[in-house]
Length: 303
Image (cartoon, rainbow, N blue to C red; front, side, top):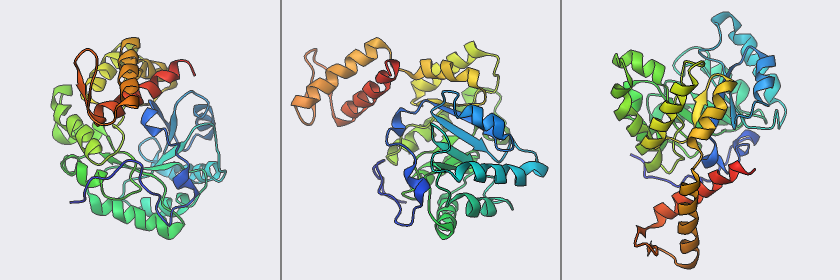
């Protein structure tokens, strides 16, 4: 098993332009919007929707007969170094299927690609195979394996730490629910905790929550986000722009949280290592790092 590594990984020596396209502030991304790759007009609107990242989907959202067109349209979009104001990731088709290799060869060298989402990742070897294929095509972009099976969840840390190009992991809960026969959220508490713990152990940002499928139920979305935040998730993937403001509000720190973070960061600026705050609370380096991320998130309110 690989040793944990810092999230600020060195770039792959063979990485292409896309590997540098993700901003350094990834740990303050809160909204990730899925859009179907065979609808270029919808993708263009998504780039200006307010999402932090646009996820162009070549997999579930695209009918089989339209997948070649979706790939061609996405490749055209990503031929520009900056296809829009926010990073663009692409979810390719299943790694074990017949389409993924061709998609990797087409997309990996493109300058506008900020990340590849890898569906149904089942282990370290799959991540290494994707990285090798991308390198052969011209460069290794940031990789985001999706844990959508019981095997993927069991190997969550192995996947998260598989390669320096892995910049995040996430659950794919629809497939996971179907495989496990889970009827409600209670059955997903352990997989969710495992994903959060694996990301932290590998030095990656906290994972974003999986999509909330009822786009009309914004109150339910808000409650679900609050529960996810309590488990350690940061932000959420969305399938409709109307979900974005709800997700952002749910994951932004409260004024009280920002004030506590400011106190911790101020104390750490004058005292290295573990320290005690004036009210007697004891904090260490991990708490200080979290406080600084909270302050970066709080600045979104005034940006």
